Amino acid sequence: MGTSVMKGVIPGRNERRVEAALVPQPPQAMRRRRNVRGCVMNRPLISTCIVAQNNAAYLRRAIASVERFADEIVVVDGGSADGTEALVRSVPKCVYLHRPFDGNFAAQKNFAFEHACGTWILELDQDEVVCEEFGQAIRPLLERTGEIGFALRRWWICAIDPLRYVSTHLFETTWIPRLFRNDPRLRYVFPLSGANSGLIHHEFSPALQSRFVRIDAWRLLHFHYMIHNRARREARFAWFSRVDPYCIEMNARCYLYEDFSHRVLPCPARWRDTASVRERGPTPGEDDMDMLLRETDPSLEGVARCKCHP
Image (cartoon, rainbow, N blue to C red; front, side, top):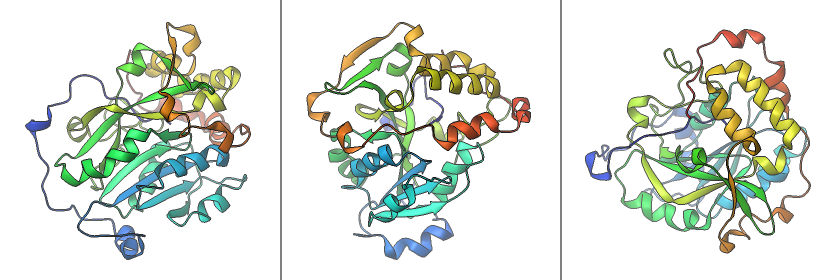
């Protein structure tokens, strides 16, 4: 949910390198480092961070899609009442954390990052899964890279059997920073100076985010359209428009895609098992994040707003 997009040219792979020494780890993470299952200090440790709220049916598959390669899975629950806590605690690699959700997605995610003990962080939405290529190639990539982070594209899934996604110019030209070193400087900034409240559409420091390298071959599979029908997406769009009016066009193209030029295309057949909806159970009802977004103090309308990315 809500991570700001990366558009324009990102510097080439050979134009920069980060320091080889590991950056200092947050104290919470250091206390738990020895408890990470399968911890081997001469290889990168991967912490997957997920913010969750009353969406256990889809969260289950998100966890399963990263369980094979992640050393730990940090889940921050904003106050679920649907079995999310029991699900997370039942998975040995998962770390369950509770932080009441107050409408600030950036703060919720930063809280997860601060409790991650890995040397690398993969940020995943509760309604996303990673593609097969991602799971197979992520560790070899991190073992040899000198980059500070990577940006990915995602496919907004709109149908199952066959698995299909919505293709638009915005989606095909947008890379999201999701895989990055666990560096204390890589935390979402809010508010950003004169541009972005950071509460919904958030980003890292522009100087650091510009160093992220795009990975074109991998995709995140995003199931927002499978959870939220048109009426619920219209309600979310209306709220986002009030909070971030300069993002109206981008939000419309994301949440009301039917109103714009688009194509519905098939995903590779080999990804069908990865995204099987049958293992998720029924579509959940409205989550508390939706309700809180509409109930948050209207004074949020006065904060700095993000620019639209056409």
